[in-house]
Amino acid sequence: LNLQECVAPASLALDAFAQPDTLAELATNDFEASVFERHPDLGALREAMHDAGASTARLSGSGAALFGLFNDRTAADRARGALSASWTDVRFVVTETMTSQPEPIPTFTSS
Image 1 (tube, rainbow, N blue to C red):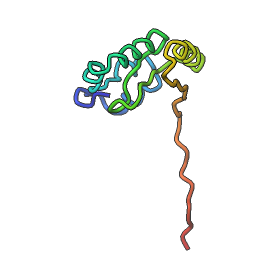
Image 2 (cartoon, helix red, strand yellow; image 1 turned 120 degrees about the horizontal axis):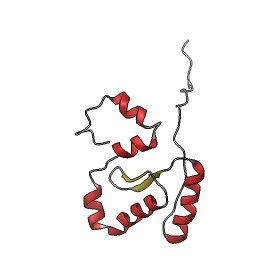
Image 3 (cartoon, one colour; image 1 turned 90 degrees about the vertical axis):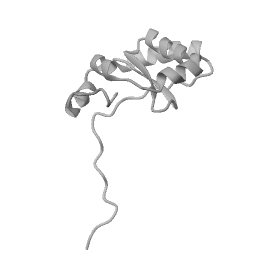
Image 4 (cartoon, rainbow, N blue to C red; image 1 turned 90 degrees about the horizontal axis):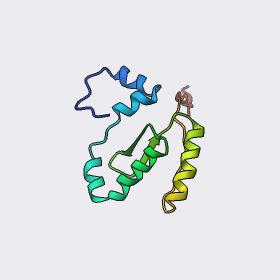
């Protein structure tokens, strides 16, 4: 999310995680322009992820990884297969977002 331009309440941004199309509109990364200029193959990979069905594809943080958001697991698995066939030197991993966080497990008891 581009926090400098975001004027919506945080709860609205959190709601976007439940709606992939809305999240795709909000997802930005200011490093992309300079990273893709220096490494055009990463920009090409991002476009390939879009072509494979990602509603959005972005650099994570300062560029340690690219990620794509897909509407469901089947679409993500299908994209992984297609992308792996074309981008043989890249590792593609399908994961899922968490819908809740686990509760902490107490490691000690007070007396």
